[in-house]
Length: 264
Figure 1 (cartoon, rainbow, N blue to C red):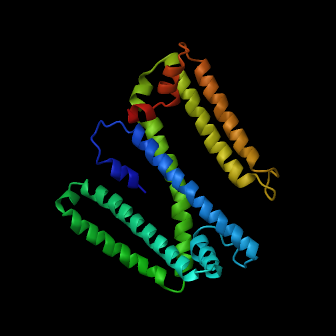
Figure 2: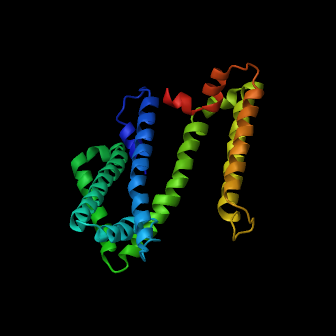
Figure 3: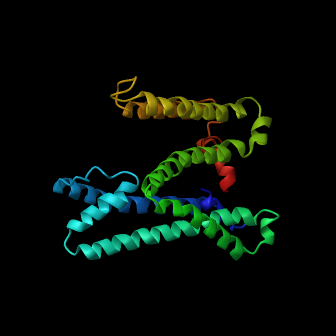
């Protein structure tokens, strides 16, 4: 959604970002890992109770169906229900902060947007968002919310992630790559081609064709295994075709091509 990009735009132009990226990535993954203990304990608890909503553990159903049903059966249910409501409220507030910041930063970076006071643009954005959010209050609101959550927070984020990686690793420094000759460009092209073959071919095959009830009747784990085998072959081949078998040089200029130059 451009949130982290907006935040990073406040850094000085030549600031090294590797440490920040590692801190944010591990912080995010660590939070998700910690949250998993709460999620799976609640899911297991509902299974143990043989609750009729034990299967409602995906997307918005987890927060608005499974968790409330579990807290209702616990001792001191009012306390746990209050904690759950406060948690969801705080999550919503900090998400709203970051989303407004992402949009307002883009507006403020334009020639016409910079002439509008930052507070005024934020107020206008919040008001427009409020008008759109009224749709969630109608009888079809939950269905509408589920659709938005699935197609924007899942599929669109996946496409945006691929686009951002493509821009950072392939488009950044493309002029330098095009001026390389022979074996200097070969390792990078091999690795790039490998990534795209694995992504474009094995991605759709694993998702849409592999499965017990699909065209290729095997476990989808084989698609993941084949994907990483292709990537591993490409990684090894990119190193073997280099004239100078310097692993440090290969790691920095081939394996992390584009990303390293962008981050240093």
